[in-house]
Length: 196
Length: 196
DNA sequence: CCAAAAACATACTAACTAGTATGTTTTTGG
DNA sequence: CCAAAAACATACTAGTTAGTATGTTTTTGG
Image 1 (spheres, protein in one colour):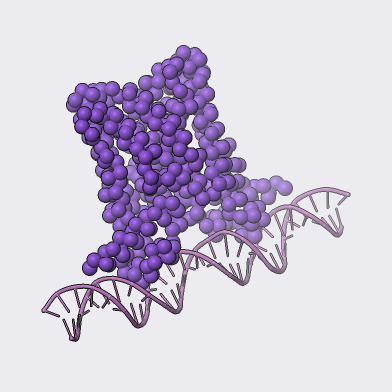
Image 2 (cartoon, rainbow over the protein chains, first blue to last red):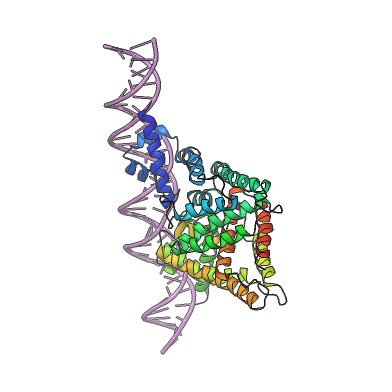
């Protein structure tokens, strides 16, 4: 029961990487089994269908992995708005799995699949809601501590911030350069300052 | 020479709609010729390849069409920041071609194709640069008129705004609802206010 | 009007797709 | 140890894909 789990996990991880760079629909099962050295029989033993694998990637890999990426969260004594800035700066400039040319895995997946696969859409929404919650909590604590302006709507502000993040990830693809990340981060800092 | 041009244009328009909803790679030529009632011979007479058609869609349809969508621009006497707000409000809530479930055509196209087709990437970058320029000009004029804070960096602010737009289009897909558009617009208004 | 070119039509192909049928090997628990 | 189940392997299938080969029809300019 141990080696089988490893096989399954390897499929998920390799498939995730392929899908991140190439997209879900254009990543074929043949390609996945070629890079994993797993045979088709093994693949379909672990997953009834490609979509079942896709869903497992969202729920078993991304859901846990992304929270980890975002949650280098609250160093104590740090201003909550600085925390948020740091999270996105690290995500954009300090993450060496994510590549500027390939954008954000969750963003890509949403864009491609949400309109056509309700299961994917719901799973992705759950995943993203986790992150929104995490960020919203930071702002709410900031409000309580008087470090964030009382007029700020945390959910609304977080939606703006996350939208900006997804958007700038797409701009990175468009220009194939992280210069736009830097420009975005400067303006994010201004925006966050306006929340004080 | 007239009917042929109409055929070509119809292919571009129908293909654009299909690609907008389904994505470029998952829209097949067979599907395009089925919905246009054009035969495969005619299709490949007008376009050497699928990619040539894709490029024509960007350069001949979207490049002109999008500027039109954005450029219900400057009513005179309107505050430039109000103009920008109105542009995005109209785009998000008042455009009856764009559907919440399918996002932004240019954003989708960029996400899917920019990493894998340099011609597409460059064409899309040209298209987007037009819009950024249009918005940047509005802010620059606002600065000159003293209606926008002199500390504002127009390019930087516009990048933030457009990123937010692309991002919230993706959130629309994620939740399959335009509620997030409304929330985003409220926060956009706050942000724009901070530029005064 | 009429030849040449432009525009369109039909039938095919080779490569790829997700998925299945039918095995063999490996692991597991009594 | 050994049968049964779990895990994996191989060969196939039916459908789809972009693109081509080879036509026929329509338009155009002299």
